[in-house]
Picture: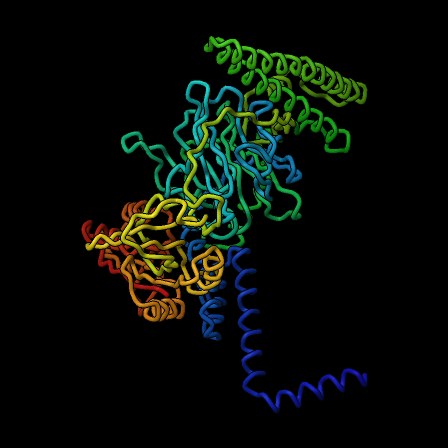
Length: 619
């Protein structure tokens, strides 16, 4: 008690001495609490309420970094509100929780098609990138890997003769400032499904698809798959099963950090979407509880409800599940046999032969399990018979044999095998010139003497009327050469973005033998006095990075759903936020790092007559 009194006494004195500081701390704490409240409401699909919490948090702080973070969260809630107008309620066949380590092995995909990470393509395993999907026989691989900044992007490599091409980003539309993971190409090869944490979404990883545009020979702007595929949680690895019966994806909604739910839905080629405003209804749909068919319940209405009847129904599910597994294996085997017949190279034929042998070895095992499951089912039926319970075996068996989805069909989560490590004969990349300042045994001239735009610094080492040789460089690299109109040569080394960077290397250059070396500066390729360049550098640092948004005041008679879709396509993955200002609906699209990109969208909107669009700068 005494300690508590002493603590509050010290706090009261501190508050009296620094009232402004305590008030600022209290405001910051309250703002943080409102952000956490907004996050919680957004995860409960209460988007309007979460927007209000974020608005209040913004009004309590002047910190630009904090405001930018809250604004991003506000946009997520705005996106969620827009997505709730196009929600879909699928028929859920089954769901099961699996470990993050191997959940993908329970997908109805060809056996041995997942390859362990690290490998030649992906050198580092991460939370949502545990393996690369690369079935035997495919001549193209789409995969996720880190770029130089540690962000995961989607790359593609293809087989040309016997060599795999250098991996390349598939296009800028499917590349965001955050991670993209688990890309899967549809079986016809026209649709790419993937998950992104940086595109238009409602939080975490959302599910997207991109269509192949044959005319443009490129992938279209990604489309968020919407509720309930996407959610405020992390959603990833969407596929349609090879037999065309199911859609499958994973999510960490309502489960522990080391596990995920895998959902199996009835495939719907033309899903009917509707506007759902009730947050509780959105939550119910997002839980994706398996649908129990009334028709299936009626079939077994003549069996009294008890632990024994439940045991019977469970065994029926096992039989159905094993039948599904055998069907999937046979389809996979047929595809492997077709690939085997289509190739003539002995090495390739041997690979497919091994795949076929492994699959054929698995079929008898599954058949034996099915026989055992059917025997157990028949045993339970005999027990019913002796107990006086009347059932219709023919009707039940006919029901078990029907190709039914949407009810308690006992979907099989069969675990596939991990494939062998990837060993690809890949093209050798052409070595890129290293523009990092180095001291080598033999110096190097820069491959390109162009000074990039922006703030740049170099170190001038000497000037002479005679062209220098490698020996004159004293091991420095890269050395830039320029020649004046009078024929004099000037040599400068390195390429630095800040004055602090160039200053840290000045002594290195002097120790290499150039005692009179000094710093020179450039702004957008034009040489200027170093003091002026430093002024501009400091001014840009204070201003912060510039981005651009397109503000659209829509024409009520022209801005319909088609217009919105056209704007989203043109925006190429940028956020589209709807706002109400003085009773007027306004859309904000962005941010664009380049003003020209923003102006292109603005011209498009104005030219199409969708409304009035303008470009605004955002710091």
